[in-house]
Length: 270
Image: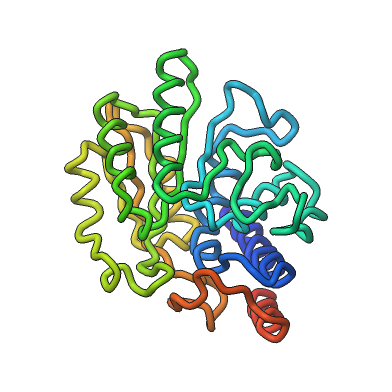
């Protein structure tokens, strides 16, 4: 798929994120908007997935470790055809397939139920290890938030991934610099993320602009290094695409009201 086509999907995904969170009057728009290019690229140009056969054993797997960014994942899955886009209206509603965090028992295309930070990358590591043991050629991708790296279980998973030489596994870091209580540096400094993953035995690819589709695609299409898991460190902008949300920690878990919805959608139509 061409870059303009992917960018058009990304713009629609952003509109869906705004509408879903506004309709529900709750949710996490900031980190959903920062991760949009990553998810659009994965599902439309990189991963082997088929919405008509979502349980195919040979499919690639994706785990949204930063499960609160479910609006972005749901939007991408809906646009891809895993379920009707009419379901967007039910986001965060009782009995909806689109709960506040991904539920693999409810939502087609979701490979793992997530939400407790740090655990998604452990699930993905287990999936990759299982694939190695069974000879399944699938690839496994997991998307983490940078604040999530403050969870110790992330580093246990990373240590295991390197130990078992899981070159079928890719950690993708949505490094927007902000978390619910402020900047990462204020809450718990992460230091040199690339150096940490290198020290843990990963091949690290750094993406200067994780909201630039071409740069994201280049990183995701880089061939794996034999015997090493990959970490793609994407420097992104929280709230990307909506000027009054960009680089604002307050939009981590706050939904837009009707006036803000209208302003955001106007920007996204431009």
